[in-house]
Image 1: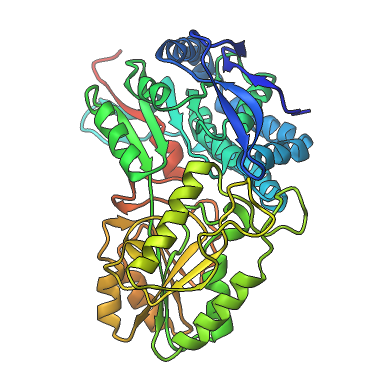
Image 2: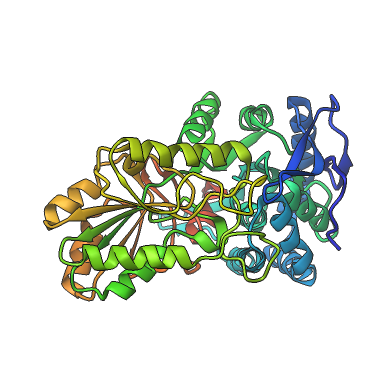
Length: 483
């Protein structure tokens, strides 16, 4: 069982490993402010040890036939399912996720592993027609050691997703989870060591020091990062010295554009679901936090959004009835509260919620689900990713104008259009500058549908065959003059 420990070393080469300098950080339960455990703060030397372990395991794992690699990932998924409730409980305590949402993350973690296991047979080369008796063909080969850095909002799900494609492609992995929420990733590594070769999955907890060391290590030729635009830019710069292959899944300030033909109840439901409040308290890069309501339906939809936000139960994430839990850590909660205050100072209208700690939640990192109306595109609350339970409501009347406003930011991760008009749906879908566009979407992303951002929202794609192939290198082989 994945029982909570008092202290967490690193997990390197199939075993627990103390940090080189003995430094540790405190993991805090964001619902209470109480200490959960002490977690090793990894150094550059710790990262080097993890990379060495991964490099030692890489040739053997790459030589394993794809069907056996797939079977191992499938077995790992089954083992996680056997321990699902314990894994869900870890993210409740460490990240503040409501238990119902945390269970869904566990299920998604297993699905990621099974999905990429099922794609492993697609690691194919091709033959190229050449004149005469020569033969030209391509091979797909793994990079060796892959570095993955994941954020705090879906700890187990993102950890499993981070290792799934690289492992299926024959790589070994060094994973750095978010320093605020590393516990479930460390348990995942321990479980993986029972199924995979020692060194195939290594986890180094810690902050920027560990992350930078992983990105810069010369044996790590492939980096996958999920997080903020600012940190993603730093990762890209640090990887540039050695011309590493990098994929980035970064931030979003995603628009939901509501057309006047939509029923107000339907629109309000989409606006509420699109904020991902009931899994991550709005801490989601895909949250539709800019809601553009057409003048004809603005007041009716806004009223219903406010009603839905006020019906959400905020509180203890351990309770089955809780809809919205705390934010992941105190400093982030303070940033979100400050953004709400700043919106009021710029002239926006607070319709429900607000920066004050809700009654009965003091001591935790709770922020009320907040609706801010009267927002203008120039306001910070409409321009900056808040990454919390705060939705901005804006008006529109002209189609060309609202598309220009929605596209004005240098972010382009997702967008959503609410309409029953097929022609309008296609016009808006084509006009929006985002890597993933829903029409009447509820946040689900089917496996196989590529997910990736435009502009500052990222590089590369996830959740698809393209992601699997991105963890391989193409080698061309030209054969001629053979007897």
